[in-house]
Length: 88
Image (cartoon, rainbow, N blue to C red; front, side, top):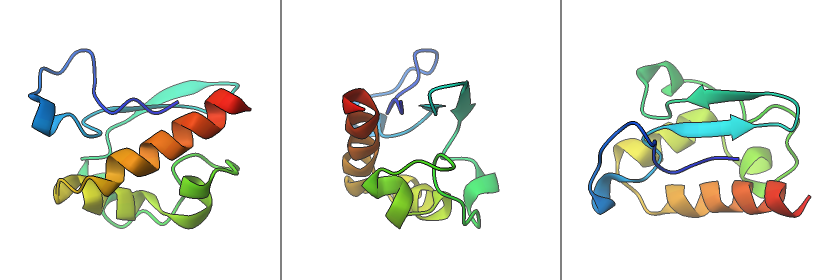
């Protein structure tokens, strides 16, 4: 699951896209701050071995870029990932 905003970070509605992304692959959970510069050149998918369209077609660096640009596409891609995991 990927949340688009952290519970412990206060943000306005406009800044709520992926401040703190919480990820789960079914067996473990961890926090990924997609805003971190560590993901600027990260070519891995959001979650390893995930079969959702977001993870199959986009990298962490692309998602980081979308966050930095405050692009609405990021929210859509995270929703695709969440919905996939919710339904499977």
